[in-house]
Length: 278
Figure 1 (cartoon, rainbow, N blue to C red):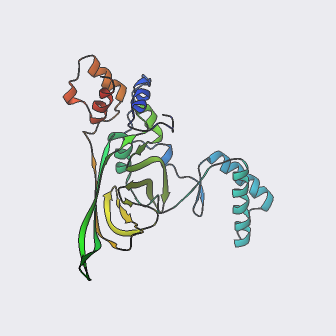
Figure 2: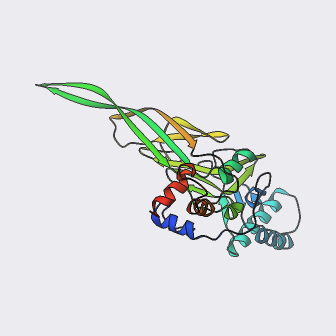
Figure 3: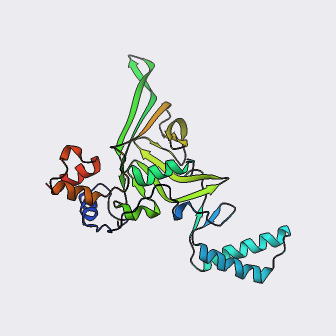
């Protein structure tokens, strides 16, 4: 799926339905895929091209030597980074703002391969300070304001054979299992959310959390209005529809077109897809 297509749009479904699925059925359950391998890393820098990293390491070792003194190690690591960047290799920085949710292999498997759609709901409660003018007098008072977000996410990848490298859900909630970093024996997929008056990474006051996978996403809010005081935030992420292993959108629509599946039995994603076909 091209990166410039708006997920959930008519073009999104047109492209998805034109995809050709491979004849071989792939069962992902119980398997580790490329994104769960241990990427080479130096500090918080993760090298996404292992072959480039290994060649850079060999050259740096030849130039600087194999000494284990602190300065020798530092020089060798700096040279590896220089060589790797010169070759155009991609580096991912571990930023807790993006990788704040630890997850088990089963949780990542569900977020990648089983569940195709999610819904996010966030409710933010704030106090708004206002002034009531009564003749020559001013009387301050407070009112309650609610900011509510409800949104459905869409997977960037729509066929089971594409999911060997993980997938990206986009919308108010973003789940990216195409790149998963491992630190201290724990796996961290990217997950973040941006909605009506809140975000889960960046700057802002932490007023709540959204339980997700093995941790939680903080609800952060920021307002330039000094008369607005945020009090609390409540978030919920739920799966839409039943879990379907090795699911394929095109195959589900094909079954519907052939009369094998009633519209009421389709997944939510398939129901939205056929709405563009009517």
